[in-house]
Image (cartoon, rainbow, N blue to C red; front, top):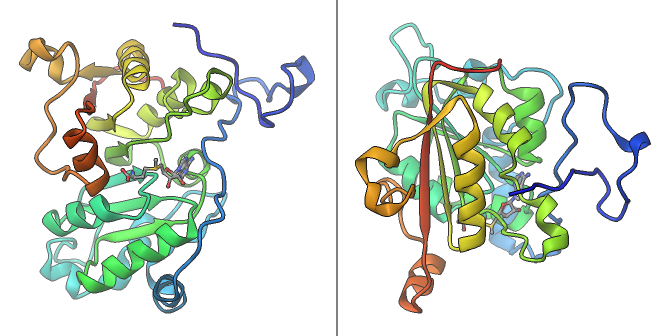
Length: 274
Ligand SMILES: C[S@@+](CC[C@H](N)C(=O)[O-])C[C@H]1O[C@@H](n2cnc3c(N)ncnc32)[C@H](O)[C@@H]1O
């Protein structure tokens, strides 16, 4: 499969002058800022809890220990901190595009000893996840309300992630929009470099052509291996849904209507380009 060259501005035609400096892969604009209505409850959650759980975007590496440090006490109880107050020892999972945060909160609740760094740009969804954090008394989530591609490139140290969750990313159905899909070789190479050895990338989609693209792209990244290839050869490269990923209402409805869902779980090997 051939992946189209990326461009910063979607309506611009490819041209040499637009290329980024040598070694810097061009950007993917994988989202549009939708004009969804923020409910009063979401707005209140943003105002009241934003200061505690939102991490501002910065163009320098994030101090991950400090980012989760306000949870002192609670964090220690939940296994997030070591005896000397260090949160850095607990696993760190990045979620790209959490939507309304339904699955995010459920997973974080069942894995209280894991830190979740969750990126999305949609204010109602960010408010909704903050409401869930409050309602479920979650201490292991931080939200970055910013483009995950820039967060990865600019805020995250190499080999800091134990896992990446990318659930139902926008499939960008039209061919002319395929360049906006996140799963493309240059981005996956950069994302993989931020995984620890043994860390995983877990993608799920209900769009078969995108599932096939995911399988192709992840399959040719030399530093990744497909965890399902040997354990489930009958699934042709796809993985059974890991038990930690709950089915959202949207997904359950799709399954009732006979639509498929494909999970892919790849793991970083010792090979790497960082
Ligand atoms: C189709 S929704 C899926 C949401 C959720 N994962 C689910 O399963 O319901 C995709 C989400 O990804 C977000 N998104 C897309 N590209 C993004 C990016 N580069 N950085 C952060 N969020 C992004 C969108 O704003 C949207 O909320």
